[in-house]
Length: 298
Image (cartoon, rainbow, N blue to C red; front, top):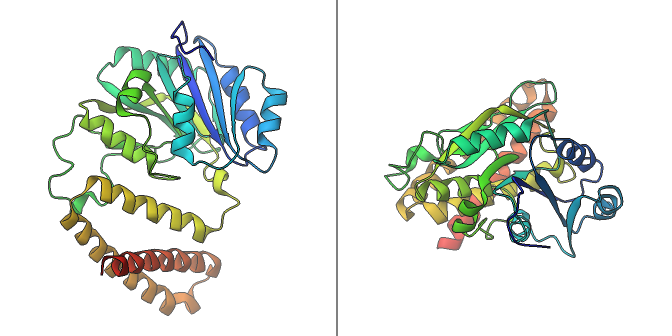
């Protein structure tokens, strides 16, 4: 691939893992965007459902990078970044569909806001209602003691399902932190961008329908929660002081024990026992992870 920057406005980067039944509509919605010069990259992380072959056969305009093993979300994004020629890079989940004029709207916003280092697009549910796309606080922010204060802008982070950044800003950060495998990369990237003096933005007029959680639908809820909890604690270790982490772990341990106790007591009286058991599984995973971390410190 030619690495020289030419007239490409936006490089769209999608990381795929077993999403052959989802990525088609996503790629069509990107290809149909008008008003921007674009290129599309898909990095397939050794899918076992024929995703790579499906993309190669049906989407000639897509630059496909087919990994022989699942290298994780961060590494896969960085593989594509190395080839991107666009002035901006849009990181997009495969279980999304762009609304009309989404890319043109995002491009216009970024062009008139040079203070923005990364911006989230407006994430929508399939029924048109909004998903929580923006956070003004980082994980367990209330337990921190100054390590994430005095940062530019009012948005802490945006949902990683669809976010756009100047290519040069991403490269200056070294791309995604490859210590993250899945989950946590978006929050980490936003915090590092703000520490470089750039703000995080939100493009409300650029709509993206997100079929939330479809990329991980073949994993059990226990597996998903374990990945999320481990990503959270990796974020803490990278960005928070040891005394802050200790406060977080103590607070989480107390909260988790209380939730487990109340759920066990109330379970016989709860109508939706399936949902209650799922919550029990969630807090058992959190409790196990917290206990594992405590033992590893001793």
